[in-house]
Image (tube, rainbow, N blue to C red; front, side, top):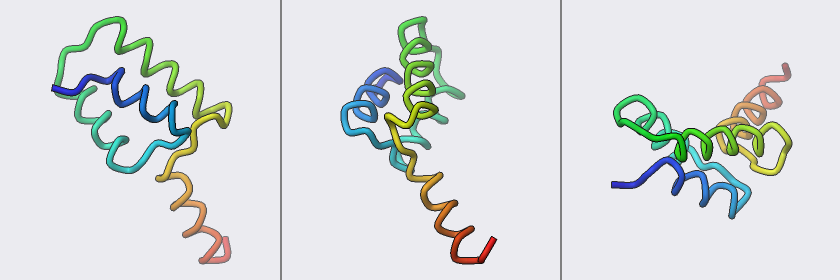
Length: 71
């Protein structure tokens, strides 16, 4: 089974968190037991996203919708 840290590694390596990866993280965080290494990886991803090192497809789509609607 895939682990949180594997999803995080890929997102950080590519600089992009896809919708699929984001959903996968949600599922893993809700339905699996994870250790401190996975938790640290998830926090690292959050920091990378906040600093702009990793872009989120979901946020890009939201901004596109807001711009298209004139908000």
